[in-house]
Figure (cartoon, rainbow, N blue to C red):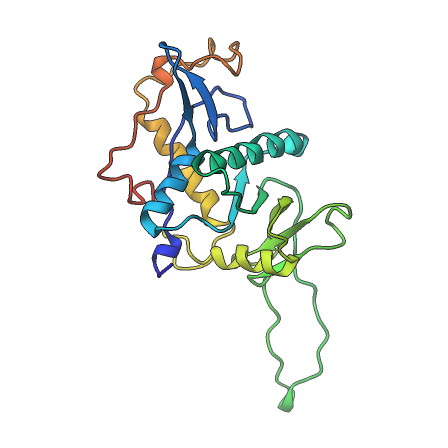
Amino acid sequence: MDWPEVATYRCVISAQQPKQEIITNLFQVTQDSNGCVKTDSMIKELLLNFYQKNRRKPERIIFYRDGVSESQFSPVLLHEVDAIRKACISLDEHYVPPITFLVVQKRHQTRLFPMPTTRKPEPKGIRKPEPKGILPGTVVDYGICDPCGFDFYLTSHASEGSCRPTHYHVLFDENRFTAGALQSITYNLCYTYARCTRSVSIVPPVYYAHLTASRGRSYQGNFGDGSSIRETTPGDELPEFLQVPKIHENVSEAMFYC
């Protein structure tokens, strides 16, 4: 894909019940009032748009997921990877691209800081200044990581003193990336954020998802207090005032949320 298209992301906005960590509309089969079966799929819409723009299907899918607690890793992984797979098969029964599923966590208590080093004096007694913070691109994938899992801490932004790195959990990897390859992809993506000319602390797709969700909420005419919504079950339909308007086709191809 030609630059800058490689850094372009299309968004899909969908509403769901509060206090749910699983994205219910990644792929969902429903029936209308006439009994006709229809699919409501955010992934399918994105795949169709990719094919229309590039005239080919994605060969690999890398899914960065935010907003998941560690206790919900298993149910989120099982439901959402299955939804992605069903969306692919709904387009073509022979289309089974390898999927890599990562959970991104920023709210944790781990801090990194540079250790003072002892160096030999430079010629004429001149010494290079010690680094004031963790250098961008620093990765920690042992010691403080899960010995039985595939996770790593990445400091992708410049900082002074101690810093809080982003914690990436690789829950599913059909692409069979090496640790170095996936860390490099993630770090390089942090330089493509449209709002900044430097690297950012979280991979841009997650930033864009936050911006899109905030924009979608502002499109709702009546927020309500949500008191009557919390008692509903996941299969119930959303009240009319919680539905998000469909994005107009004039701006659907643009990164209007950014």
